[in-house]
Length: 269
Image (cartoon, rainbow, N blue to C red; front, side, top):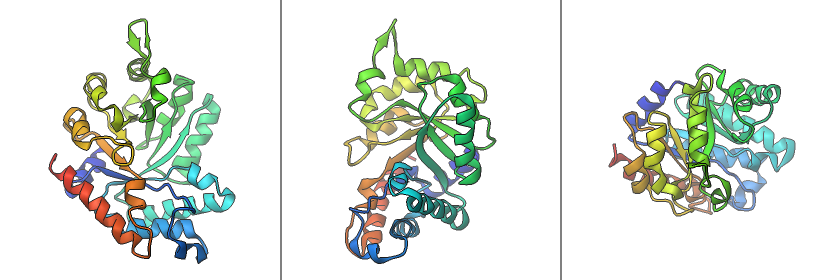
């Protein structure tokens, strides 16, 4: 999917919501556990109930890999369902991959070609040759970790080294890589005070923003400093939406939670 298509969908729906499909069998409604594929049935119900309120879905692959081959098959069925029934939606494989060049190429093929995701999250620690293989794919995007929402982000990402914080160095350096126009960046909502500095470095790139809701991030603060001329934000909510209800009406409860966020987002557009 192109950025132009994503922006058009955001403006059409007045939403820049991304819903994280992080499925834990211990948390989904119990009646689904009797179905042949509980993970997919849960995802399908959430997607059908919320697709008109969101522009993106983001399965975190760990929640599928944990269940072995059956979990991976559930992931495959989920992305196939999205691409077939709702091709206008932007899909993110939250896999946080990154390795030496030939290995990264295979990771990219797995998510971009086999599973046909629009984007994948990548860790930048191994540098340029671990990220550029992902950037080589036309109309696909690589979402690189920059400043994350967890407490451990302060262990390394904000450290000042020779007058330059690590996350800023990552942002600046990545702009020189081949096909860097295909980069997006992960910036946590719990770090809202950093957004103005980040926008000075990457004014035009989309930012994937986790941490709104359950982790305490403020949507208004993120929008105040993070919005750009193309909106430039995908605000992710996972637990706050998909686990809004725990009974047979869980999908309706998810829709209500997504609607509340979409309505708030509409005020910024």
